[in-house]
Amino acid sequence: MKAVLFSEYGSPDVLRLDELEKPIPNDNEVLVKVHAVSVNSWDWELLRGTPFINRVMFGIFRPTKIRALGCDIAGCVAAVGSQVTQFKPGDAVFGDLSGGGWGGFAEFTCAKESELTLKPERMSFENAAAMPQAGLLALQGLTYKKHGRNEQKVLVNGGGGGAGTFAIQIAKSFGAEVTAVDSAEKLETMRQCGADHVIDYAQEDYINNDEQYDRIFDCVARHSIFDYRRALTRGGVYAMIGGDSETSVLQIMLLGPILSIFGNKKFGIVMHRANKGMQELIDLFEAGKAVPVIEKTYSLSEVPDALRYFDARHVKGKIIIMPQESS
Image (cartoon, rainbow, N blue to C red; front, side, top):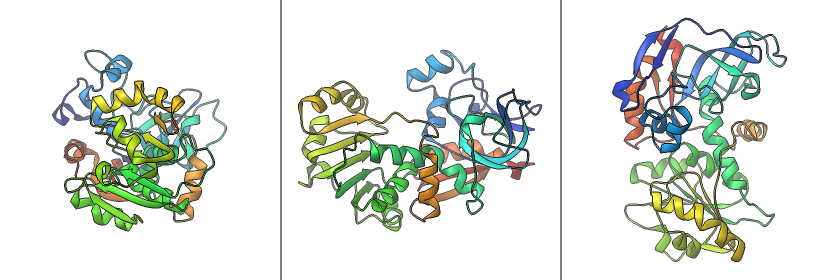
């Protein structure tokens, strides 16, 4: 089988398309013939070896525990281990492998039974691969520290990316008035996802426009925690899923719990729980309320190009890799 491998941290130039023996699943694993796999920020960060926690987890000087990137996969079961009870060969499945061995940028990969879910018939493989990480981060971020009150105004910062396009749709399904922030080239995409208001961050700083929000869902945190506090209504929630500024991330991590305890506004970093809430996300998809935005697809041999494009931050929604096209 073909797989895109890496043996050192660096740019997409360190990736190579190689030929490997097809893996054999362990007793609790499923062998999946991969039809689609999405690109996530975690792929880029692990390739680069940043943040440092990735090196702690996967190898300080070089990646020793993972050979292939790619964690959001969709495909068909090719074989099952002796202890697998939920799936059989031929089943269409999808899931997030970030809690285990990754390996999605390949024609075949092994996954734990617990990491997979049956794919609905009306869901394409491309849509299925786009959903697990981005869709569940959106769902988890919009329900993070939720305490029953109706959140009428939601702001999604980074609304044109993978998690952001899901967050706009899901927040609208909850009945919120949604303001979405991103670059000018992504404004129309955010409108198509249902955003009531869109902001070009290069032209307007949403923190300083005197508006307040019941929830801020932040994919690209750049501001001070005190700026976010000013932009929240009384009882409001700030939920970070990603940050461009290390200072912002550290403030939310260190000061967020203190301000949450002693103030009337809540702050925190959403820790992704892989595959948790998948059925709710499927229900939203089938109701047309959480449909992936897919801008481009690439073949397995084009993975380096896909990651270069991802790093340029022009992606509207998701990028999908189609491994079987390289057969």
